[in-house]
Image 1 (cartoon, rainbow, N blue to C red):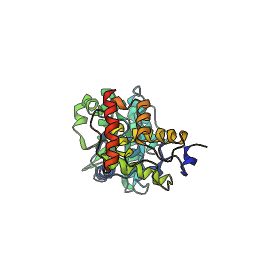
Image 2: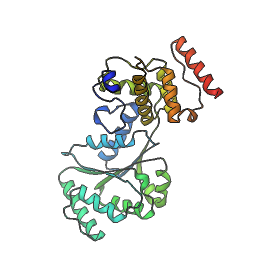
Image 3: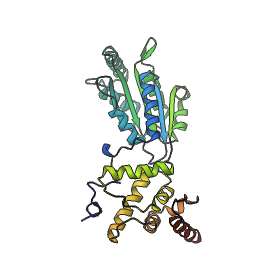
Image 4: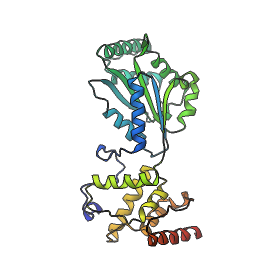
Length: 299
């Protein structure tokens, strides 16, 4: 028996594995999707979304792909898993994912095939969209030039291909390898860590989706989870997952501030945080948090 059964959850609430059921439609994600979708629908060409590690870029990329119905869009998602890829590989993958049959080996012939396919998509009244996740892996000028060339595939007054980069903040510097491409960014959005309120809403959302019948965290624990995770969704998941497991091992009914502190220390999160702990509404809880914080400062 694991903590899922112990707390009567239907499924694990804080797994970091991708799962559409747990998508959190927070204010940031809503605003990002609105802007990226507008960029595509108005044929702006190139849009960029950046964010720190664990802030939800991949989740957002997958969500956007799901929100592009095939009746209106020919869309694909490419994940750059390493930096050793070549312009030819990029071009061939885009060709295949946008429906080019039997791409040629020659880059020039592939480009011609892609152009003809994009014209066909345009005649069908649809838009071609390529989402590039982990775009910071595109670390050569040749790759940046390849994307600039793809953006040149157009007809009078209309671009035939829309590209969206999802990546770490260092993507801004990498794109400067080809300044003309950097200047073509029509829209850019930066994902930031959650606020304290958003962190609490995120935790409650995931618990609700998991089928939780009651809040398993003490009220005073929630501001600590936000503080120690820095509001980063991936760290919130890791901290909550470990804290629930530790609570199960101790056969407690609620995740306490002390358990959050112990788990965070094991994960190496305590030394990352130096800002004051958020205030709690309940005075007793606040006293408890302040005492723990003082103990942390002494260490």
